[in-house]
Image 1 (cartoon, rainbow, N blue to C red):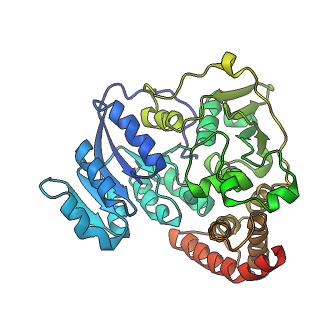
Image 2: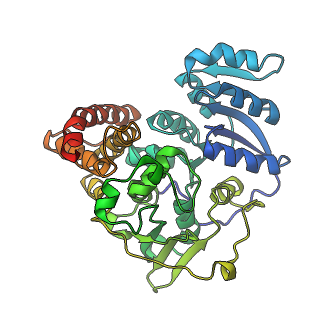
Length: 407
């Protein structure tokens, strides 16, 4: 049984929906709050959380009349209390407070806390059967099997908030699972789409951060440049929709207008299109199973004029190949892939390794992990967090030799 609903065949009419936003001050949170701001009569904010941005969190909590606000940094509790003084908003700090926010009785939860820290809060929302708009990759990349099993058991509804997975979610509603042939995730190709391997190897941080289409955070922008982000999306799609690696293709589409496609047995291909704006998939999740008015720019295909496509290059962008390898290996390998990539990206940002060494560190960490016999099924959040922690440590120990090889 899938926790992702494939048929949009019911309506919630005009009932007020209570919502919680985990990661309210981040980029996904900003887009979500923007949508809530435009539809105040439809939504009541239950809880909001932030990592360290106390002032931004307090401002949003007061603006939306949230009942609870929590900051992940436990040392910022007094600052949050002071910022909310004179209001009736409850507040908390630390991991337990973020989990409490997710466990509070909201109908709909945006899970946008980045990193492994987002796993337990998302599970808290899942376990009470909420509708969870999932924008945290780690929930699926690090713990996909048991996360989706827990969601199905609790009757939770998982709504993909990532643009590509939301596109697949919408397109999948055109047929049944047994009629599906494959899904196609599109990729912009990033800033290095046409670069030679030698030039990609030497790319600077400033060059990696110049994404042609999307305005995103530093980490995800670098992942897009290496196509590691697309690899993470392949892994996510596998767990979200119960797909084998062979049922997932990637197609480079520089215009970022088609976000995902699904091919069915009659060879019909259903695609979802839209301007490159994260508010579109978030609006779809926020309104589901209805649709709400979204503020993204109207799609003008005549003005765009041309949509082009290319096959992905696994040689110039080995991070994508490694994602398929990790998915086929299973038993925690995707968790290792993600953890090693985070260490590698941080090292690149810090100037410790070249851009081309990001994929080499990920591959070396995965190989070392497999050789050590550490692969085992993950059955809990603690299992996933433990593998994530140990894989990061392994990547850090391998970092010097990877940097030396690249010098």
